[in-house]
Image (cartoon, rainbow, N blue to C red; front, top):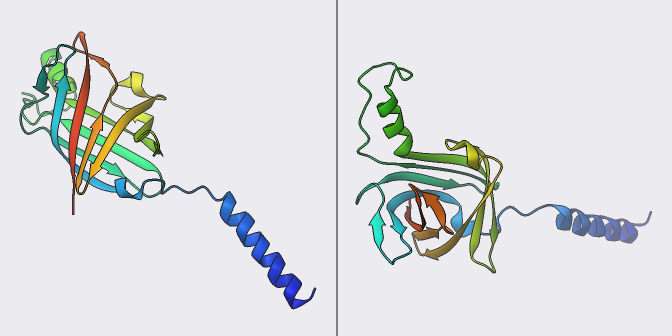
Amino acid sequence: MRKSQLALTVGVLCVVVTSAVPVKSEAPSLVGSWRLISFEERTTDGGVIPVWGASPGGRLIYDAGGRMSVQLMNPRRPTFASPDRLGGTVDEVREAYQGYLAYYGTYSVDLAARVVIHHVEGALYPNDIGTDLRRSFQLNGRRLRLSTPPILRGGRTSTFDLNWEREQ
C-alpha cells in the first residue's frame, strides 16, 4: 500500500472510530461536586416550604464519565440512644430514614429540554432503583437549580427545587 493510500485509510478509520465513541460530556458544566444551598417544596396551592429548614445538608456529584450520586440530609436528625447502628428503636429508625435521601447511578442530559436524567442503580428508597428521575435544570455561574416533576411525599403531591453551589 502506498503512503497516500495508507494515510487516507488511517484518516478514515480515525473518523469512524471517533464518531463511534460515545461522548459522556454532553453537559461538562454539570461535572463536579455541588453543595446543597436550599431544598424547597412547592405545594399545589402556591406555598413554599423549606424542607429540613434553612440549612439542609447535601452533596451532588456528576463525573465526566456519566456517573452521579446525591445525598440529602436533615442536619437536625436525632442520634440513636444505642451505639449499635442496628439497635435503633422503631421511632429512631423512622426519623433517620425520613431525614435522609440518597441514590447513585448514571446520568444523561437533554440539552434542548434543559433536563438531566438520573438513571438510578442504588437508592435508600428501594422504589427508585431501576427508575429514571428527570430533573429540569438551570445553571447560572456556580449555581445549579434542579426542579422535580410532581412527587408524592408525606401524603401530598408537590414539586421540589434544590439549589446547589459548585464546590471549588
